[in-house]
Length: 91
Image (cartoon, rainbow, N blue to C red):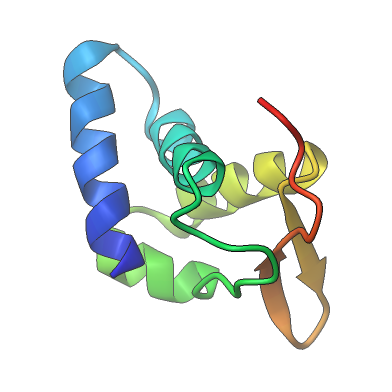
């Protein structure tokens, strides 16, 4: 499950670095994308679902998703959800 993967990665990041939570989530999602754990066109859970599953504030989740969208990793479709871009940028 994506949430378990993200929690594991965030725990590793918080132990290694002193990063804010939105940055930890951003890094965890980015790593999952670049490692191929999420495929092109995959739909992400809603920000509300991620908020509940990860025990984070919605602002934290939205900040991480917005940053990934700005960088071209994710595409939001109004009324449909947020999806992994078909052409993921190289790291």
